[in-house]
Image (cartoon, rainbow, N blue to C red; front, top):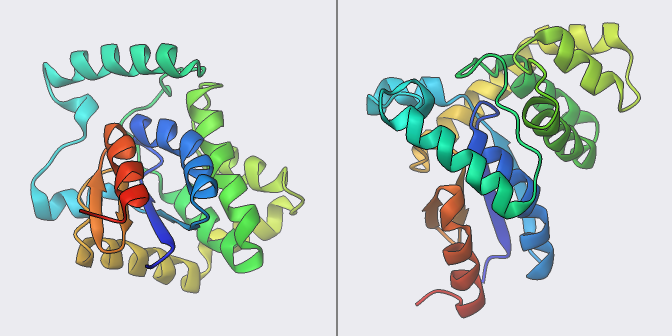
Length: 200
């Protein structure tokens, strides 16, 4: 059995925040290799015709209520970022730049971005905020700024979005385990049951 769990997400997805706080423990419980894949859902929405959940009338009110009760249930801090939905371009590029330096640090950075946005209420679409989060991991701000503009990083992000789309990813969070897709934070228990039973 393939022991790799692919975790696709957009930093602008509040439900991906909750998933990011849980997914490492899930992978550890089952001795899985966890692959983080930040993507830009906006590019995929152009194909699906979908809209960000928090910009859809009626749905946005439900989502706000559900996010708050999910936070209470999980006993996690939750603050809606000041701009939502937002473009997570800088955070995605920073992740892939960091991944070239140190994969583990890239994962740490991703979790820190979610914490900054959804626990501290910072503007994680802002390049300055993103740069500060990378610098906090031991990098110089100027080298981060250069890295975010590097064409190879831009290409890597574009390839990541294309690969996600080719794999059928259309939302966030989205998981693929042994070619079996699971969409949404609320599908994580089903995902774990699938892992335990090795499919059915």
